[in-house]
Length: 386
Image (cartoon, rainbow, N blue to C red):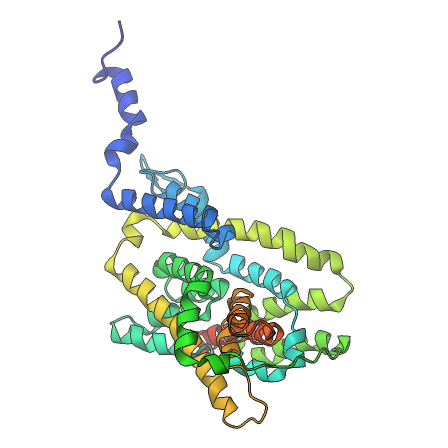
């Protein structure tokens, strides 16, 4: 005879075995759906799969009732969860975003910027959406540091968004991270309508001759050193952000540590991206994520991306007023930090108007400038508000 399911040790064990089904809440069910959606976007749509896949799987883990992936009290004793430990070790102390910056710096070639320095302007102007959205967030009742964390979504730079929000509003880190990386992946969907609204077919056909003049190695080596010192002295709070980015670029351009540069581009980037995605998911529990504020943050993140694109295009059109050799205003949109998606998009739009029009390298110059601009914008927020 089998023992009864209720009563006795066997009944208690059966209750413990199926306790997850009894304790699950509707919020956890919804977040499980969110996790599955992120996994779908990563695998089927290939939207930022390197980050959305670990984030989505981690979201499943943290929304299991009494999950061992999170730290919580069990029988009066603290049980330390793996994802909580990762969060404390890599996000709370900002280590993972900074390590990612080394990898990004090692991947970036600033040659197109050196060959057409005017594109640096768009790396600055295209960050305007950060501050405009920050003002919008203040109007909706967020405090100044929460508003800064929401506005930084407009940097189109996931590590910068994570770094700033982990300092200013760690309770909003989940939706901010999802918004930042999701909208980066959706650049080909978000930017074209804005660009086409603000430009004419004639403007999109403007050719831009590209000079492939050689850039001295000395210039490439001195650039990350100069940017680090200048930005650090101007805004010391940005020293870590800009410093780690430029250190990665110095590994690339020095020419004496190829093994380290390739390791930063590959092994470091891959390992830290996995850990970063899993660590972020520690904040994506139903209780913390499902809130009207989350939808508002996602909406304002979209506004930030739209404003960045619009201001970048309009700034290029403003510069054209004073130039004899006109710029294709679409390159202004590439001033956001979503590298290299935005540059490729601009070239695709130019080719759609004139298949012989090649402006990719100019767009890349603006795009890599956006990497610097987004980090400087984050540093300024840290300097003024920390």
